[in-house]
Length: 410
Ligand SMILES: Cc1ncc(COP(=O)(O)O)c(C=O)c1O
Image: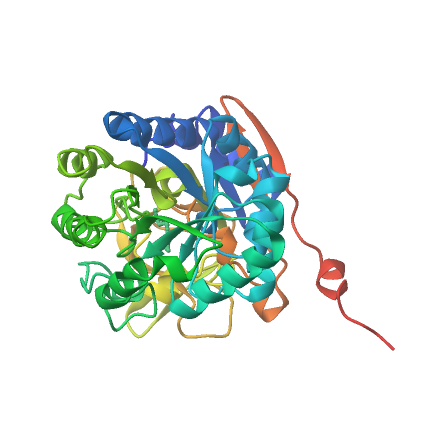
């Protein structure tokens, strides 16, 4: 179980808040996040990478709640954005534009123009066409933005196929030949400063050696150019979900990279490692039914609130809010959405449950609420931030009226 969540007198707590009481007060489903855990996670990554002098850019895609962003900004992080919307949000939350890095394979000319106008610090460029467009737009504006070319090193990381990004079958980055050509032709892009390379070979990376290999490939390409010494090594630091084999820690990554990166200015884009284990999705049991020899625990949480199990087969630990001494039995924890993939866990070991009992889907702080949808006309859940014994709703539950708000009725 993640350290943000622990049992006291058989009641699951987030820091000092009993989650049975929180679920009662706010209703379920709801997301709950521990401020302390996020701070500790940032410190862990920062301490590990401090000897490398790395700058940290929190990856908004993992969780872009404003209160969380303000907290992370107060910890002196930069931001990693992948859309105009994320840039706007990062700035709104207080991140200085110069400390934002802008990544993404499909930046539109309008997004590039917006990012130039607000003064984004670094552009992680993913194609020759993007570089041409950025150079033209920068020239029109009389500015000269920093560019890191995103290398696709052709490494298939040992992670879920859907989150491996560093192999040439993936849409991300540019093959080594293209990066080499662009570096050699830098003079053809006078309105940008190509000062670095970027890699991100996947999320939830299980093997540090693959990152080392990718960094070496990037360094070999940059070697002839003494002024290309920024290396953005992306995100990918893994967190344990359920029954994971031992995974490398931030320290393991930093230790493996430190000997290589002397003399380089290092950037890091952590997302999951900052927020994942700080968050949980609380749900309530609607009913239990047995069918085909299985126990189905039907909850008010679903793939609309937490898509990861349906999208990636992600295995989140699920635990009761009130611990019981009774023997556990595997349960399929499912939601009310009309899809066979609406399963939060295929086989969670859980005690006997009845309607009204609360459950916590743990390690749900990253890629949870950001992917929530209104499928089946489900209002998105509220988000609660916990600090010690205090909690506050930092995003309210949507209402049915909210779901109509943007419709144009004639
Ligand atoms: C370019 C880039 N940087 C950073 C991240 C964050 O990765 P993680 O959440 O694994 O730290 C991602 C995630 O997909 C990414 O695509």
